[in-house]
Length: 203
Image (cartoon, rainbow, N blue to C red; front, side):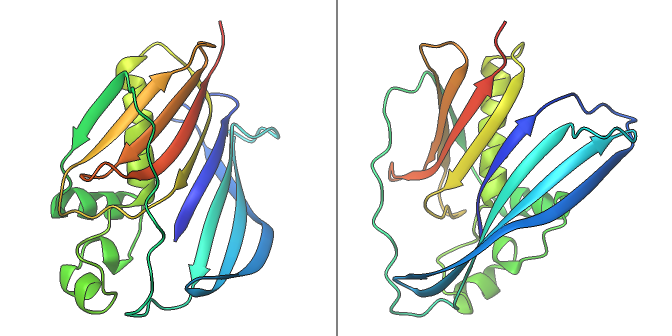
């Protein structure tokens, strides 16, 4: 499962640039959770443009490997979400959106596009909306509401799965410091599904 990511945008990546990505396993840890053994892997990705030594983008990608889901597994309790969003957008997920995002990101996991598999084998009620898709929509919310801003850093953490059965909402609130944007996603019941923060480059 894609648990979250932390990005640093150090310099622009432009159309036509030759980009090289280097990926390194930064850390591996094993923990015991309510659903059994969990393996946490942190991968560091560095993207360099046109042969430069300094990376343009640095990402830390958090991955969780867990034992197969059992029928009696208890889902974690939902979290209360923040209120007072200045920016809001409702998203209606469907099979086409999820299939296209899977294709765009070369993600072959059937939980995002094969309804028979995800409901009968994995035991979920519907197709699972990609965590990175929700994160992309949160970043897009910043672009829509602060089009002239430059994002310096972005981090997100998946909190609860989102299914394609109902609309969900992405939210944002610029903080008083003028450079921090609190972002979050909520499901149709109002529960927090993703928590994120974008840092804007100061003037």
